[in-house]
Length: 185
Image 1 (cartoon, one colour):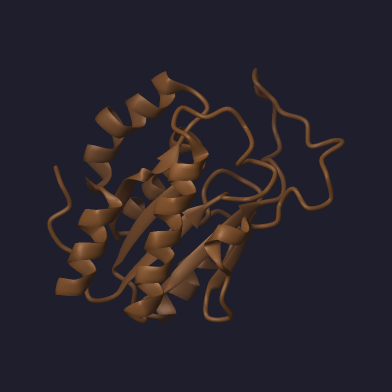
Image 2 (cartoon, rainbow, N blue to C red):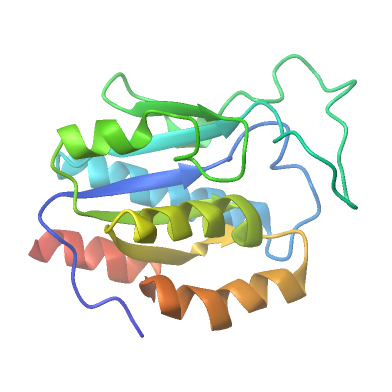
C-alpha cells in the first residue's frame, strides 16, 4: 500500500547512517540513500516534527551463526554522517541491538512528544529498519517506511522486508510522497 496519510505528530527515525556503515557494499547506492534521508530530515525539521537520529555502537549479546566483530573499527565509526546535518533539536539515540527502541528511552521520548506515527529509514532494511518498524508497530504507533531512503547488504533480505514484512507493519512510500504529505498535514 502506498502511504496515504501522516498523523499530525509524526516523527522521523533514521537508522544507522553512520560513518562505519555507509561504506559497506549495499543493494542500492548509498549516495541516493543519504540524499533521500537528508531531504526527509530537512522536511521534518521545517514542519517542526521530531527527527530521531540513531547510531549503533555495539551488538546484542548471544550466539549467532553470522557474527560480526567490532574489533579494529576506527574511533569515529559510530559518528553520524554529515549529510544528516545534526541539529540541537534532534533526538539522538544510541543502540546496541537492532531495534532503536530496545534498551533505550526512545519510546518514552516519543510518548512525551505525543507522537502517534513514525517514518523509518536507514540501514539495514532487514535488520535495524525492520526491527525498529516492528517494535514501533507493536507499541501501537502507525508506521511508514521510506523505501528510497533505505538499503541492505543483501538484495534478498531487502526484498523480503519490502514485499513481505513492511505491508504487514504499515504503509510504504517514497521520500517525495512522504514530503508531499507533510505539506498536507
